[in-house]
Structure formats: structure tokens, C-alpha cells
Image (tube, rainbow, N blue to C red; front, top):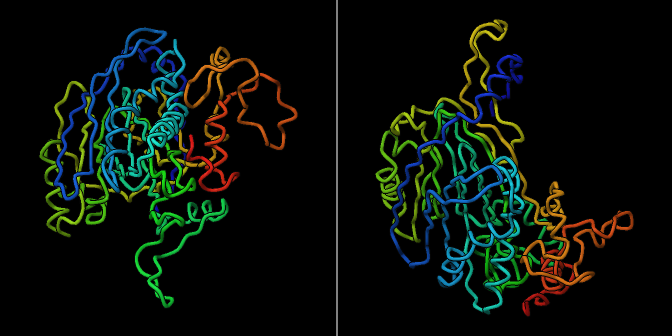
Length: 425
């Protein structure tokens, strides 16, 4: 790993210039393409640009891209594609300005994922799906993911960043520990006589993923709480690649980026799928979405060859490029090409994920469930702090709150009630 350099001191005059120029920063041009080769017909995508919303400071737009890799049927993937975005937006407080809206996204994504899972499980269908869900607002990229459909970013400078987590039990020690601590078992398929084959799986159920939406038949240890990462690009832009495991089982991040370098998004997506299938054959649904985020005054240009190492998914701070002469404060300051991390959290505990900077503007939601947005009568809501060590110090209005149904869902996911106790939701 490349060591991070010291943070560069920015002159006050530059900060004031930036503050005054904030409203003049243009939104990027977003060009996208997708490609797929089908084996089972269980991969689905969501591509929505120019989604409009009314903010406290005017009307703005954002883009949404999603990849849903279903298993045991396509029902969960289709349902999630059709309902997840609405559930996320429903969990956002109204009348927020742009910065507040972006800051509220990680919490709303958690609520939206859990509600989508809860609603789908009420249908008693046994399919499940991975989800990689990307929201782009200006130069800010927010990614929420469950499962093993990954998202990578290459900045215009050539740095590569992982924006999603891999929830396969085979490679995620933390998820194995979470499941066993909650009462589940992790092991390989036993063929009899002590012989074990295949990847690590969660039992009961035998799923090799620790997080997904759906999968009502495999127990509550498989949770829908997403890993969320939010970063801000410089105005130099970058390229996103979102792909199902059909791509990542064949290609590394560097291989995927290199094979399509210089191509526009549509051709790049097709080339990545072609390379993956050529390398390992069509063993699974293989889907790729490529998104180019470029300065509005410039067309999408070929990215330079990577110059730096891949940054780890759990790295707390990204390296920042220092200017050539930071001592010359009177010299005009040039914004370096950086990717700034704004938020990262992967805990599966709802109490930790929903309590993130619970804003005062949510006070009016005292009688509304933080997950499913159902209205509750006074004193019906259950604080997510119930059972915490410091719960006695909390005031009656210390939220957020869950309805009884979502509280049961939470307790099941955290192993506080026996497996199967949440299937009646």
C-alpha cells in the first residue's frame, strides 16, 4: 500500500474563493453504458439519469444506477429493482438543502434496503438478490451494497478505489464472526464421511453470501443492511464500473479497467463482459455497467494508464496529492485531482446505522417508523436504543423509532430471537 502523504494546508484566501464559487460549480456530464450475457436470466439493472427532487434550496437532479444479481429465481431482483429507490427516497426528511440531502443518504439507504427486504419477505418467495446501488449527486458518489456485485472507481489521475464490500463468506472474516456470534454456523457442504466441498456457506440455508435482499428460507443471519461508502470526486472526474460476480470471478479491477481503456462507456461495458466470458466461459449471468463522470465542458476522454496502487476498501483516508509549491501562498492555487472520502460504514447493527447524526429536522417523525415509514400512535414506537447500556439516560423522544414489526426484524437479524422468528413479518 502506498503511504498517505501529509494533508496539504490550503490558504485562507483560497478557502474564501471556494466558498464564494460553490454555487458556480457545474454538475458533471454523466455518460453510461451497460452490457450483459445471460446464463440464468437473473441479472437486472436500473439506469436512471436526471431524477428530479425538490430541495429546501430549489430543484436539483441526481442519477441512480443499480445492479441486482438474483439467485434461486429472479423475483427478489425484480422486486428490488422496482421498489428500492422509492423506499430510499421515502426515508429522506423533506426540505433539506443539497448538502443536507447528501449527508442524509447513507442513513436513508439503510432504511430503504431493510424495508425492501422486509416487504419482499412478506411475499414468502424464496429467491434472493445481491444489490449494488449507486446514487450520483453532482460530484458526490454514494454506493450501498449487499452481496458480491462490486463497484470500483478510477479517478482521472489513475487511482483505483473499491466502493463496495464483498459479502462472500469465503473472503470476509468479519461476516463469518458476525454470523457465528448470532448463533449461525459457517462451513462447507458436507458430502458425508467428513468430506467438505465448495465455498463457505451459512447454515441453515447454505447461502455463500452473508448479506442480501430476500432469502427468507435461509434464516435471519443473512441480513439486508448494506455497506455504504460515499466519496467526492474532483472536477477532473472518473470512471465507475459496476459488475456482477460473473465479471469479478474472471477479471481483477485492473484487468477490467485496462481492457476498455480509451473506449466510451457503452463499448467499455461490452468489452469487459466479452473479456470475462472469454477468460472463464459463460458460467453465470455476466453484467457490467460503466459510468463516465466528466467535466461538462469536455467530452468523455480516455483515462490515462494507472499510476498508483489500488486503495483498500477499508482505508480510512485517501491519499491527497500535494501541490508543487505550497509555500507560495500568493500563487493561484490549483485543485489537485483527489477522491475525498465522506462516509464509510459496514456495521450490520441497525442501532448503529440508523442513529448516525439523527437530525433535529426529524423531530416531527416521533410517530413514524425509521425503516418502513408507517405512522405509529404515541408510545407505540420502540427506540432503537432499547437494550443499550445507556438506555436509562435517554429521553422519551430520543429516536429514531421502530414499529413493532421492524423491531422484530431487527432482533431476528441480531440473533436475539430464534431463527425463523422473523418469517411472519
